[in-house]
Image (cartoon, rainbow, N blue to C red; front, top):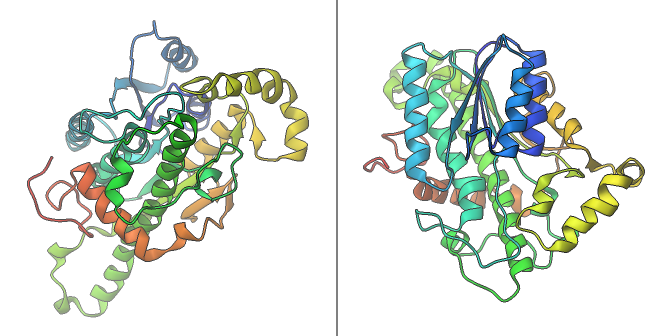
Length: 358
């Protein structure tokens, strides 16, 4: 499937292996790899560049994208959309929202937009990126790959102290209230971001699927509809999947903004013992396996017709709260508000206010 594939956080543990798989399996694709630090002096970006250099004939561009700045996200999306229109880039075939943040050792951080950093990086900025770029997909559609976790499900993750859940006032999700229990509340912020991602994905798929239904109705009674009120049928060919890639034994995330006990657990338990652990706990796996899964999903080589939640490539079920369609719609509307998405700056016209674009 030739086309442009965007990957955020492309120098991450899973993403580097996904890039290697994409370049191997789809060498005619154009990869836009986004990172916070584009210099090879950054060890993670250097590792990514080493992977890319193994495929000199492939078209790969590494670009900076700061997900803590919605202004930067919107500008990046506008640039990509313009390059597709100008045929400097092929139409999009996939967006892989891999970048993430968590913080379990300090008070919550605020972005320049005034939002809690974990929620903005993991969810809000990715939602903005996707909604700004839906119109840049080709007529064959494509894939949207987002990342959730078993921690969205109360009681499923051993790091959980406070269960995930949407507050009545959804704005609490983007506020950064300090707490004495930095580890517990930091992980809860992360878990809530993964819950929000999953619920938003369900809502997004409903809007994308609605296009196909609308097209079928139009063909029977075209006079009943204003065609300008709806987007092209290609949108019904875009599918969104929120995947739980498992517990990644070699992920550098366990060494970033985490208590030292997690680093020790990774070094002395997860990494040396993962071949044995995975026999007892199938979700424990290396980043190579997860990267291969991500590539296959992005290329629609696995679960091509699947939408929604995949746990280690197996469809659902997700948590009871995540399946609440009323709450899904609330997080959909609120996310658009947080992300600066309006009817004027996205081609998907569902559930958005008409306001001045971000």
